[in-house]
Amino acid sequence: MASCPPELLDDLADLLAEVRTWAWVTEKKPNGFYVRRQPFLQFHFVEGRRRRAALGSGVIGCRGATVATSAWTTSGKLSSGSAL
Image 1: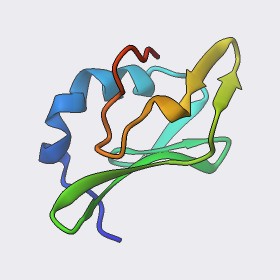
Image 2 (image 1 turned 90 degrees about the vertical axis):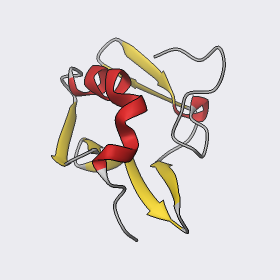
Image 3 (image 1 turned 90 degrees about the horizontal axis):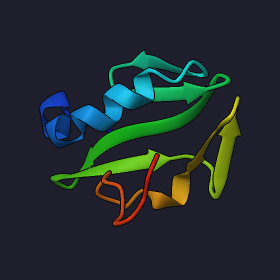
């Protein structure tokens, strides 16, 4: 599966910048995020559309921060009213 070109993630720049500040998250490749060596958030380009792979479901809690992974839509955007 092809990685999403970075220019197609420009609308997520502020959000991705925030994710990069989380101490427990590493970015092994551009826009490919891992938690404890496990894939956490990645973006792919499939059939002409951006897709996200937010692995796991429910809530991930790490060192005082909680992220609702179900808040992400298939377009890679946060759903309405969701917060990180």
